[in-house]
Each structure stands twice: as C-alpha cells, then as structure tokens.
Length: 149
Image 1 (cartoon, helix red, strand yellow):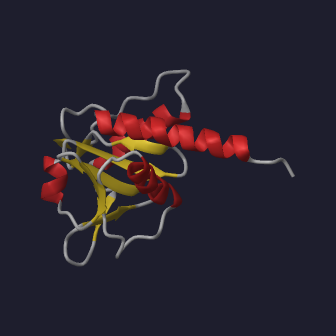
Image 2: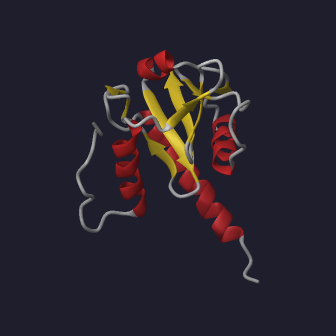
Image 3: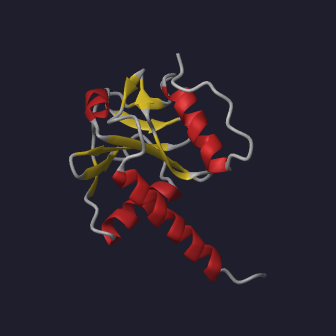
C-alpha cells in the first residue's frame, strides 16, 4: 500500500505535489534493478541514497545519462559532499539514512520509504535538504545567465 495517498493541500507547489507522488508510488517499485540485482535507475528519475556521509547512485551501466543526475554529482564535487557512482543493493537502500530521486520536473526530491520500509527517520534529511538548496541555486544562476532570443 502506498505510504501517502492523501491529496495535496490547496496551494501546494509543483515540487510538493511531485514529492507526494513519489511517496505514493515508491512502494510500487519505481526503482529498476540491473541484471545482477543492483539498483540501476527509476522509471523516469534517477535514484540516490545517502550511506554514512556519502551520496551513492548507480554506476550508470544500466541507466540513461541524466542532466539532473550529472548536475547533482557535480554539485556534490564542487561542495565537497562525498559522492560516488557504484553498485548498491536493495539492502543498502533499506539501511540508508536518506534517499532521493532526481529529475527534470522537480530537481531533487526526498524518498521517504521504499517497499513499505521507512528510509532513515522518514523525513527529508540534511544531505537532501542541502542538495535541494544547491540545485535550486544552480537553476536560478542558469536562468539568470540566459539571454533572450
């Protein structure tokens, strides 16, 4: 059963609605495993976990390159947040202190549960919160630097 089936409150932002959607479908295996059983990607987003002090995402062997995924990895490098592309299992996901997905629509969005199991304490963690802010700054800077045609 989904972890969140409530309708978003009136006046909710697109990001809040997307977060509720992620909560609602996470229990329906939005992640995809590679042929060896490691977490590879999601249906339309990329999946990350925070293990210890390190941000992990798949090694990229079985997922499409993603612009937002690449931007988040670059943000980590630029801000001395340890990040690594590697293989990890569902057991690693269940033990993670935080998890999040990245995508064009909403940027960085926390994942609160996977397969009915709460990730960390079930709330947005400090790493995800920091990455959301840094990604927002990157988007704002990119938009401000654009020259109208």
